[in-house]
Length: 344
Image (cartoon, rainbow, N blue to C red; front, side, top):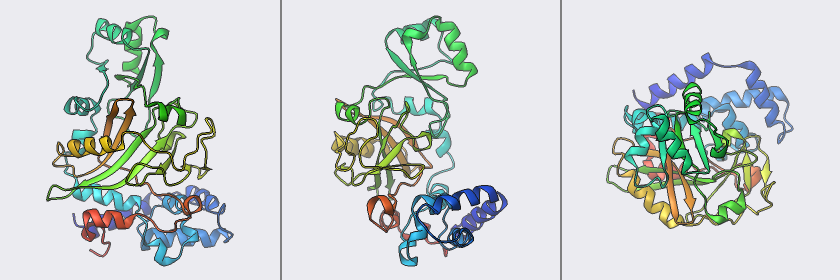
């Protein structure tokens, strides 16, 4: 399917699933930064969805209402990211990296943690695993977006057999030890493992391009996922946070609200090693050149958490950064204009 067909398909599906209540709710969120009447905002959102291939939430999160036409066209969008995944990555991409058990086996030397599959392990094997760790994380083997993840203190597990059955019943059969993150990241927020999302593209010549680097930070939850209450900030090419943190509700945090740690200027430890790890890992996915990597950082270096064949888009909202242009140019520089050219 060519780019024009993919774009038409997306717009058709968007129109078919259009939820007027959701549209109005998002437009009301835009009113936080715009004095325009609600009908004007809604009309502009609909226009941008067609003109810039932009999701409604993209319009809200990135303060698009405040921007000029020339500024708006610089933003990468989630519909464009959908096209990249559909065009660049092979049809086997979900099977290869979406199956967490397969991923952990394929990248065993880079994950830096012990794990067990409760669906295939015996009660005794699970009991021995729990005895080796104070805390474990239970998750669906095929889950996405941080859904269905729980942290369990192993001292609270009275009967491993009963616990194993509950994991199976709750579709949380992948059980991993909880990594001890680097002390610097603990000071930032200790109750979740704060991770780096690195979006990369390996071109046909074998060169790896780092399109965006993101620091994801927990906030009142055991996971750092943006969809689960966490926040993020963009990193520069040396792993230093460029801006305050921002959450899904567009709240801006110069300092972490729980620890008080300043976010702008925070330096991610072992960043050079993260780049080396991603360089190596990307070579193992020849049919998946466009990837969003999630990496934890321990005192000894990075640990690969997972790879996403359909990575979200991360850019910093203008009202938090003062920067009114997006990162579409970085995608174009890495991938080339063809796939991202809406006129094709």
